[in-house]
Length: 153
Image 1: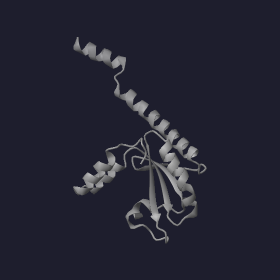
Image 2: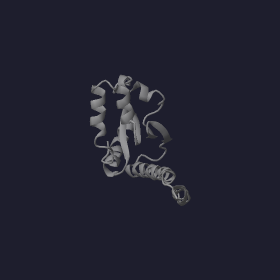
Image 3: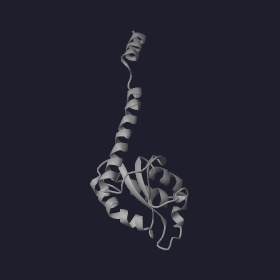
Image 4: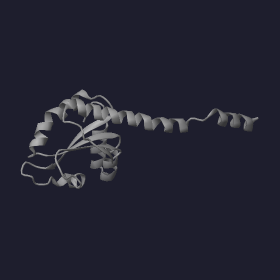
């Protein structure tokens, strides 16, 4: 995970899992923005991407968590614990952006660390923009304050 991720998330995930709250743990782990690379250990393109992915993960500072998910091992056998996560993945590597566990978009850029970081930053802006209307809706308008004052008088 990147330096921008929630430092308590792994501990919370492990604690909730250990307590038998697997679904809750998964839901907690799926919060926020996550850039996922689905890969196969035997895939040459995936191996070629690895240094750029690691460099992007180190260079990026922000709310997007970088996550690698191994779908197939060195012998192209499915990785059992990732079967559900990998069920719709047809090619490797596949890179997708998720928000709160829901797919937002596919990464179509080149495989450089700079492009991966740019992609993360674009979605970071989207996250900020989507928060503004919610913030505005939560704040009372002057007319509602006036109505409240009039009702009080």
